[in-house]
Image (cartoon, rainbow, N blue to C red; front, side, top):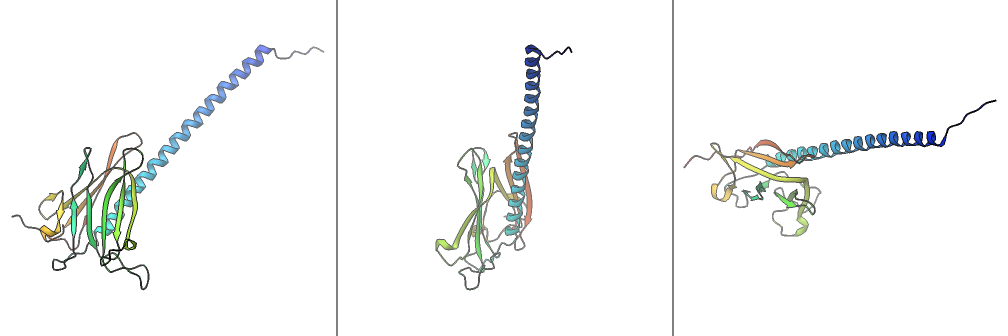
Length: 211
């Protein structure tokens, strides 16, 4: 009976070809995983922006204003840093209904939005700050949490019935705007800037006549 096995060269050649095939398969799976991970991160970032816009819109619509009420306020600051808008907003809201019976909360609360630099990188996080009892100076009646992350800008504009303006001071104008434009700016996975904008009307807004 004649039998013929593989030579050493044939075995080495087969092992080499298998190594190349496995390397190509691993590279393909690795790149596919990177793409999936990138898409997931992008989806999470866009979802965070959408939730931030919804939250801000909901609370801005609950602005409380009465000219004769000395604690009423609506202060929009126009801030710019490194070529990007870093605006801040503070206003009185009627969105606080109290979380527990007998708690320290008042019917009104003061809400603030501002950007805070993240520990790593050049991006910012959107901070939501709230004073749940406007008659108390205690820190336990102040709450702050991160509403969004990886932002590079926040731009707020205010419609007075005639023009869009970049800042607002209710102490001077004796009114709150009719509409607020909220624009959040981020960078996508490719490093390109993307902005997301929404408009929100304020029921107690007042038209301001031209001087």
